[in-house]
Image (cartoon, rainbow, N blue to C red; front, side, top):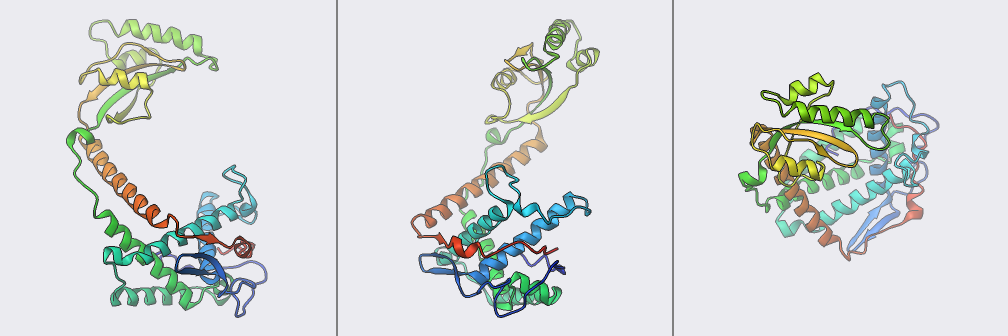
Length: 326
């Protein structure tokens, strides 16, 4: 959260306003523990309900603003036997685990929350509290202290992530980053395809036509009612069929392959460029970003190993998404 969602929350149903957060949740109770840290129900409830609001916004956008999200939280959208409500709460708790872990290790990277940070956090919290109705704040269990605590955790996460990733080697060789551009025709010849026999005949016709002088993949594909697709790949590509990548690797710029057959498809490919400059630079950035993420996850998991993180599941069950927050 970067306090970017200072939305006016409109709640359905009866709302409770008391010294407890979110309809009877004691904000001072324990939601989770780890070495030298207790996570309160106030913080846990607020983050879970905030994530609920964010996801409701997304689903309503997906539904075109006309659909209801009333029953969505009880559904198993992922097919793993877990309701959307439970998986959202699990993700929120794991995020708290991550952020409190980072907070405990700020000194490892000489990261500090400055006076300017504190002022910005307080201002953002003030705006959030002012932008939401008291009923909504009660439902979310949002108090000034709790909102500032969560904003502080997100600030710590951003600073720590930057500090950790600063150790990454950002030098990527041209050879590693290089992306070759290709064109391809694909015909379905799998056993399940009703057109398998027909496509095999078309593939044979195309194979013969491409051997003629002046034949091009685009023209031969057009003459046979086939579509030419384009793409780029690098040396480490693992999404292309193995036989297709092998054929591409053996081609020079401008060359077209013969017929490539696998159990499911027939292919023809052509190398359009040995170096697609735009794709190569994007790949270079992608490689660097992957290195950063790998290092961040490695450092984080190392810190979390044996830290005694334990969620009080009976307490988390008290957090309910019965009332819509948007």
